Length: 130
Image (tube, rainbow, N blue to C red; front, side, top):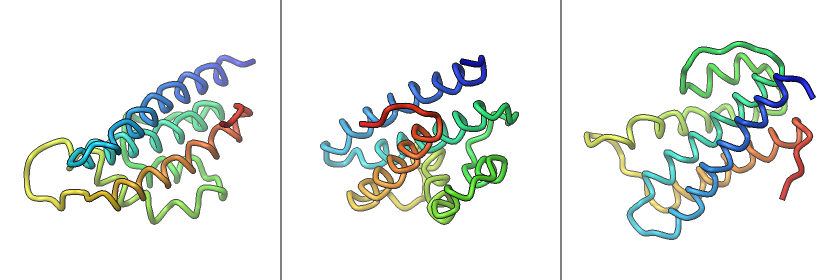
């Protein structure tokens, strides 16, 4: 196992923490903003795991669209449009202000999409799913 692959697996472990957090929070009413934040983090860390595995350098950014550009993996193309939505959850949901508060349906969709991205990343890294 290469050092890059081992570090990629560390990204996967951190992503799994975001998945577990989102799964716990989705059962609580009015915590949908936190669910959406963890879903953005789940998707981000999943992509960064693959970038790390391929020794592709990236800056400390949260922009999923830019990270997907770096990854350049056609299997992730179907997630591009949703990446823009997830991007908004990286910062906007963390602070008070004028933004559209996520509802339960938003959180459920974010969890579904981010989980799919996570499972795809794990498969590409040869990590057992389930």
